Length: 238
Image 1 (cartoon, rainbow, N blue to C red):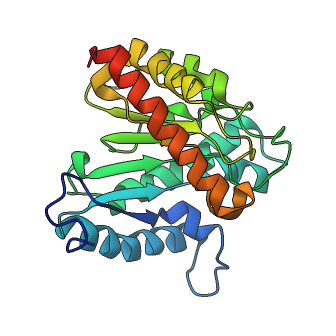
Image 2: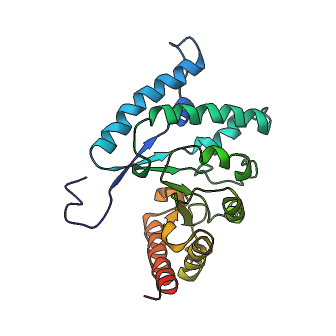
Image 3: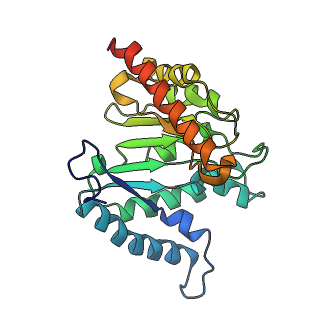
């Protein structure tokens, strides 16, 4: 990857899954407790995190199951799930010890599967946990109709001044191509709240085959790029 971007003005990144998300796909057949398993996974993932950051590459932590794990425990109250998820964040932070905050980006979402998403846990119930992760940038869903309104939650969440935000401005929930003007409006909404220097235009989640065809995914990325140019011109006058 470093060779591929040599000579380019880019900051390469590699994604890696968080311990809590890994744990959701495992059965405990070795450790004395599930918590021992969780922190065992954290120690194992730490090796991967350090390999990425020691190479000078930005670490993107993919943690869809921080919000989406709620659906795996339908009998849990919001309070119980908050306690459960908080322990997973503690395990993640244990794995991230000594890694500089500015070399970490956190991505959270409510899963990329198509469906009504009517049972998604609301951001207001977990935003404090998201902010407990020592990440210099937070990537999150902001384009799909189930979560676009949650800019209000970010506005009131007390995001530290040195944290960048990467709202999704094109989404995977529909094959409709976003208009560049809409993309620009979404970018500018966050820029007006947090400052233009702190906003990076992103996607809700991976597009890939979720939008039906690669041509659609590329068209969405083209719309993102065009919208970002509009927003840049309007925010900087350039």
